[in-house]
Every structure is written in C-alpha cells, then in structure tokens.
Length: 423
Image 1 (cartoon, rainbow, N blue to C red):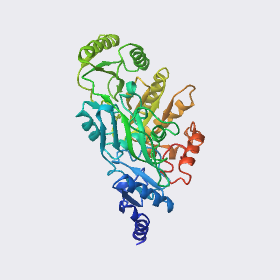
Image 2: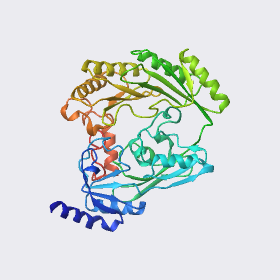
Image 3: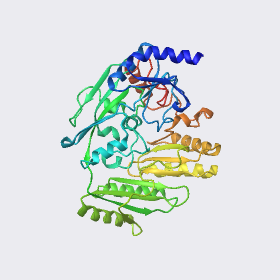
C-alpha cells in the first residue's frame, strides 16, 4: 500500500507535464538502483515540464535511452524518476550541408540507415548494439573510426538540453562552428546525464567512402611492443588509415587490423602499402573482421578500460595480461591501437576481480601518463576493495568536475553519483 501511495504522490507531482507515467520496476534499474517512477515525455516541451516539476519537488532524475548501458558509470545515489527518452526521436537531415539534427532517443541504427540514403554517415561507431544517439553521446563511447574522425564530442556541433530546473539550453546549430560561451556539446558528452537531459544533438557528417579495405596481420603473442610499433608506423605514414585496431582473444594470437577508406583506385594501393608495411603475412579483404567495433567478451564480463599513449600501451597490456595469468583467468582485449584506447574483458569471478584490481592498482601506481578504469563502475569490484586507487579524493580533475556540477545542478538532482568521484 505504501508503494502505491508513493507512486500516486509522484503522479500528482509530475502528471501535468504531459509525460506518460508508470511505477518503476527491477527491469528499469540503473546500476541496481530501482526508480520510483518511469516517465516517458512525448516531446522536448514535455521533457522540460517534467524536469521543472521534478526540481520543484526535489526529485532525482536519471535518463535512459534503450537501456543498453544501465551499469555504465557509478550507481546513482537514488533515482526518483527515470526519464525514458524513447519518444524524443526524429531525424532532420540537411543533406547539402552535411549536417543532421537528431532526437536523443533515436536509435543509432535508424540514424545510420537514414543518412545512408543520401550517401552520408555519422563517423561514430555504435559500439554497443541498440544504442540511442543520446546514449552514445552521454557515455562518450567511440569505436574504430575515432582514429581518423576523433571522438564523438568532436562531431557534435550543436545540442539542446534541459537543465536541472527545467530550463532549455541550446548551443551551436547548422553551422560547423561553435559560438562563444559554454560548449554544451563537449560539456555533456560523457557526462552520463549529470549536467542535464540531452533532447537533441546536431552532428557534422561525412560522405560514405566509395571503397574500403581491411588489412589484417597476426602478431606474436606477448609482443605488445611490436603491435604498438606497427601502429605508430602506420600513423606516421601517408596512408591515412581510418582505424587501427587490436583484437587479442583469450585463446589465440593478437591480430592488428587496419581500415583504409576512399576512392576505389586509391584504396587498393594504400591497402597494399599498409600490408607491405606490416610484413608479408598481412592479408587484405573487403569485409570487417568478426567483432569489429564491438567491446570484447560477453555482456556480463568484468570490463576494464585502458587509455594510454602508444609509448605506454605495451607495458599496460603486459601488466594486465600478467595479472590475469597470475590469477589463472583469461582476458580478451580489443580496441584502438592507433589511439591507445583499449577495453579488456574478464569472465566475472572472484579470481577475475582480484586480477582486475591487481592490474588497475599497479597501473595507477606506475609513473607516466595513461589511466586504467572500470567503465561499468556500478559492477566494478570496488566495494570489496576500498583501497583501490581512484577513490573519491583521487580522481584527476575532481575539483573542477564538482564545480561544474554545482554550477549546472546546485541541488544535485541529475544522476548524482554516476560519474567517478561521486559527481
């Protein structure tokens, strides 16, 4: 009876917003935190009214697209209202300007199909199948094409968000240039909804290349330095690869994979040159390798992220694989050997958690640039390992992050706790 009265009180508080409301359930949990109510605004205006009503009643809101990454980030301190952005969709494509404005709830696959009709693309890989545009931006997750085109934030030229008090803020637009002041696109990318609710994003686009080739070569196991040396050589060449990926399965040798795109006449020549640079064992094909642009491992695996300069990546990979071997567990690694951003997956077990903690602790204690972290922090082993480096007082830039949070969300009503350091 109490939960029913609670839901009825929330409906009374939020009902005038125009959003569809229903009680939250276990299937709606974000990082294990079950919302009291789920709200589905039909349009940006209703989303703003919903946020304003929530702010008046000091209700904590958390945004969700298709729910493909509910454990990414930390566990929200609480979740009164889960805002489902599924109806904040739609594609407004300015074909001649190579620009698109798209609703945050639009599936990436739907956007890709719409742009392909005009021979254009958003040069961002949907690393997690089923992701929405808002989810990709909110997590800041980028795939292989990041090497040539930059992370997703570099392709955002405009954004509309609803702030904590229900006010709507916009920046940029259908020009490939940002105006002075806050760059909302960069500020909200990767913020996991802690600064506002993204309702639409405007991106700059690229033509779909007429041809592409994948160059693949196996590398001797244990020779991480050779992989990174090859990646550096490719980047320093004039071949302009779109992506340089490393796929290192639990069983089997690591494989370096290079994507070359462009006009048919030039792509063949550049792919052959890349194969020659990588040695006589390299092969060239037109189809992407299995798992291309996907996270390694299974959905329930323990996931780690390595972000290192190419000079430091070999040591990071060696430390990780050494820790896994010492614990008697396998580890799969996949990611960009061209940018130094890699993901590692270990089948979830107590031994795997010990290996992950050991690797992350050793890497964070080592001198030099680079960072190892748990992107799905809601499922990270940290609760049993409070000594793990990266506690709330050890996050780089934490003071600045908190200052920005206080500026945009003074009452901490937007996904509090989802960013490292409890932001």
